[in-house]
Length: 312
Image (cartoon, rainbow, N blue to C red; front, side):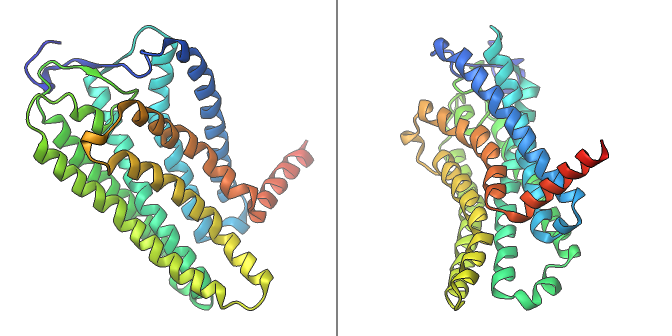
């Protein structure tokens, strides 16, 4: 692997948590359990959104998209991590690293946009309830979801090409458990000041523009809710938005920490555990956040389970 440029490398050695070998078995068991719950939770949301006619609404259309995103995002990272934790081989091929970075970045960027789209859906539902079905019609839902996916794919392609055009000069030891931009930049054997500035600027746009839009939307939503005279009406309105706002806080909080801090302040160990949170924990708890206080989803789950029980 002692080649002169990144394209000559046959693979990368994912150091991950190899400096803490006593943690590897514990992490493997915990992450496997988390991954199983992630699969079950997000698959349940997708299935219920399609099986129950009462959930054939824009809100659950976007929620099933979010669940599919989380499912794919976690799978693209955790499967490789579980393999590395379970044996002596800690490597990933060069092509595998390219694909992993492209998929994870694309899905992450798509989720940034999709959460903004979901905020717009909640804004119309609370602030323009009489026009909701006119504004948020199925064609617009499909258009907004498709635009989110296309933007994520295009943005990821740009980042991936820029990163893997950098010369790595045979440096193949990646101090992370998956192929992520901050860790890959540390392997470059050339001046990356300009690249870091460009990536920081694009990442700031990707993260902060949707956040600004979401904050603006929720500012209008809160004003509309405070005008509701009945306490029950206010609770219902807050209930429809509280789950989404919790997911937004978890997702953007960890993503901004990971990508929008100066490189000289970036702590690799902290970065690994923060990455564990937004790649494993957040996708697992998102279905719980949306179902624990959601009567529609719980009702749909009871109907599906009762139907299955009756069919026996």
